[in-house]
Image (cartoon, rainbow, N blue to C red; front, side, top):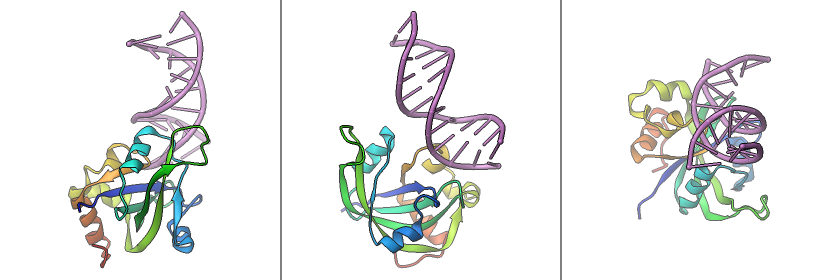
Length: 141
DNA sequence: GCCAACGTTGGC
DNA sequence: GCCAACGTTGGC
């Protein structure tokens, strides 16, 4: 079964990776952008997620996984938005900053850089692997 | 705090 | 259907 990879953004003062670790699981709601929503809908249980802190930190801090595929976002009654279930896998041994991503040849084409305002974006297997490698994070794949 | 990028809205 | 105005995101 092919597994896909994604990057999800959150401002750490709103919902941080450590909060997700505490919660054990959460619903990824509040997405109000069509393209981001379509990416949520393309997620399958078991897909892996890079958890990025925007504004504060500007770095990828952890790995999470999809525990539940897309369902209607109850926080948007009458509108057609989606949520997925997300659970933490592991924090990165070393966080990967935006600066590092920009400097790293293998990561220069990341959608994160090309589409800076998109809050849910696809990540290639090669990019995902590179992030794990650079962050010295083991036991995920 | 500023501003570039860019998605959305609304007038025509 | 075009496009100006406006609002939001997110880097700096």
